[in-house]
Image 1 (cartoon, rainbow, N blue to C red):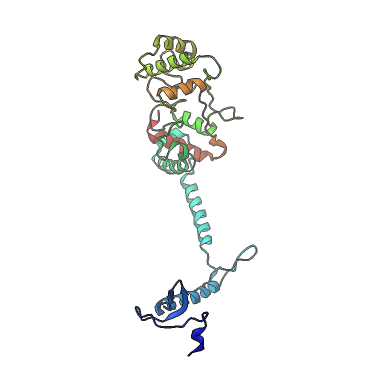
Image 2: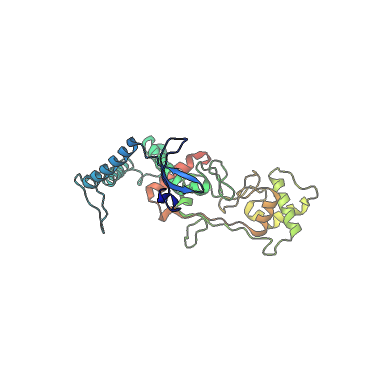
Length: 299
C-alpha cells in the first residue's frame, strides 16, 4: 500500500468525475477545488497589458518624484493641454465681454451681443453660487425667494437686483446691505397667544384665504393696524423701501398656513443672503443681475 495514502495531511490528486477536470488537492468540508486554469487568450491579454504599462512608464510622465514627475520620452501630459485651453478660453471671454464691466445692466440688456454673453455667464454664475438656495431654475423654496414671480421684498428692477446681489441681506458689517427686521411679537411679550392667533387669521383674510371658524377677526384687524400697518401698510400690500412683504397675494417665504404664520408672528424671521460684491467681479455681478432679471420676475 502506498504510504502516502495513509497520511491524512496529504491530499490525493484525482480527476473530478462530473467535470473531468483535475483537482488541486485543496479540500474544504468535503468539497474539492478544481484545477481550472485561466483561458490562454485572457492570460495573453493580461501579460500584454503589463508589457504595455512598461511602455507608458517610458514614453509618458508616470513616476512621481518629490515635487514633480518623470517627463517621459514624449513629454506629453493632458494637464498641460487643459492649462492651455483654459488660458485660451479666458482670453476669448475677455474679448467677448470687453464691454461688460463698463456697460450698465440696462445697456447690457439692450445690446443683443452683450445680452447673450451676460445670459450665458449669468446662468453659470447662478448655478455656481445661487442655485443651492434658490434652486436651479430660481423657483426658490421655503425660506428662499422664488425669482420667477413678481413678488419682490426690495424690488425687482435691474438696479434693485444688483444692489441685493452686491450687498446681500442682513450682512453684518456691510453698511449698504438690505436690512429689515420684524419684531418677535410673541417672544418679546408684545402679543399674547390669542392675539397672535387673531393677527394670523387677519393676515389670511387679507390674502383671501379661509380663516378659522372662531377667529376673532375684529381683534386681528385692530392689532394689525396697531402693530403691523406701519411696515406692511394699512391694506397689507407691503413696502419695498422697508423690505416688508405684500400680505395680500398669498405669497410668503415661510408659508401662509396658520402654523407658519403663528411661528412668524411669534418669533419673527430674519433670513440672510451673502454679499457677492466681494466675491464676484463686476462683470459677473452685472451678468448675474441681467440673468436673474430675465428669469421671469423682473420689473
